[in-house]
Image (tube, rainbow, N blue to C red):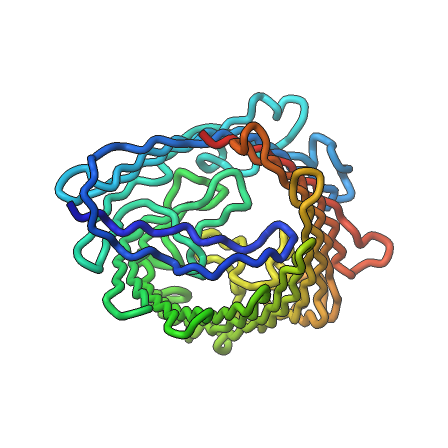
Length: 408
């Protein structure tokens, strides 16, 4: 039987500080022909998530009014070959509060549906099929950022957002992967069970991605989106390119793109660069990004995170539009886990809708993560200090985020 090509989950933006270098992997794996027995693989995760911040003067850290939390359960079943080479995957997710809203928190990280604090939804439901060097995946699914930089599944919240989409992946060309997609809808954290349109119409978004690795240690990826009636009845064209080169223990990367739409005052342009190194006892990176004022470079599926190298835990509002931004990060193994430190600074920020014109907002992230119970459970703790550089008397805000994720 022909086994379908499986899309690999490519790492999302490094929202935890650290600048770790990972080998540049292809966005997908080529299909293989293999005789195998048909069977289902069952897995899941249970999550407890808590966050508090003092961004408003009304509440302090850990006050009920400034805190939110969620408990989540996710179950998944996957079969690569149900019958005749057709595979399938189903995932259901649920969120609850454990009654913490009565005494500990006042809100949740994600709403199962608009206005509801608890409930469930079908987060993935898809079929797959492989034919020679071409594979198909149709239905509700996750999309990795390396494959789809403007419509990707984010990992910073309790569970990832997903998309109603159809994907076709082909590897006929040597060292090249071609991906075509139609993305019809997406959910977001205000209502995870609601899969609404991407953009301003119900016509969906078309995507084409090409990734080439003909040159040793060099990965080139280009993505094009076409969105009908994206804004004010006007179509939009989005182009994004990414180049990554590894040399020994170093990584050099560059990215850039444009959003073209007649509804904008002008075409929006963004670009960035990154250099990272593995220095034995620690890893470090330096990144830069530049965005203009015409359009916010954020995930079209959720409107939260960006594809920029300078993305940190909570700086997306600053970096996504009209800012030149620098991020420095380092991480090391300590206390049976990983400790990360990152600092980001807007060296030029002209957007008077984001913190004030000509200000220089900055962010400091301190994180710690470890695996326990035979590495079945990941524990994370993060501290974020932000300064919007507006009012000298009341600038800084603090955020604390902790979660535990048990995989089974």
